[in-house]
Length: 188
Image (cartoon, rainbow, N blue to C red):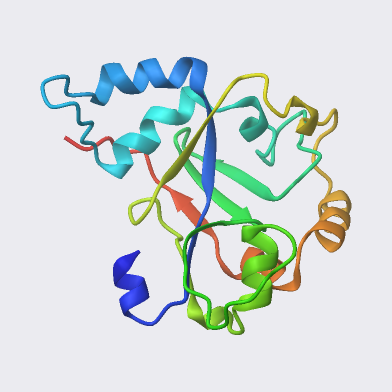
């Protein structure tokens, strides 16, 4: 993030993958925690590989082949070879924001703040590879079950949602920036 800001970028945006905290914390601890110094060193590819069997139900509903596709398609996920994922996302998480203009804003940080304080999408760095930055969101299994739909995806439903609930810059990010989470070849 610091490198991108030093290069003149005004924001660094990344996606987050929601996992089931009820199962993932224990699996993460067993696999990565060094109890001697209380650290958990791991390569990004190993971290991505470790989440596949712990994805939250809301994340699973974002998979393009889900039988119960999300009612809020802010992120679409295509599985690749069982562990790797390709994503397109409307809403990305600001990991760092350095606005050109400081002023009050309406809405959310990942919506209103960026839309109202950054003038040029070229000033924003979109993290497109999990080897650069990977964000994992721990969530309880029952959280936001209301986002899980009862049907398969429909291009019409996604477009209707995007036109109502995303901003023009977010639609541009969705079109221009595929995001890759790579976990297929576990490192040694």
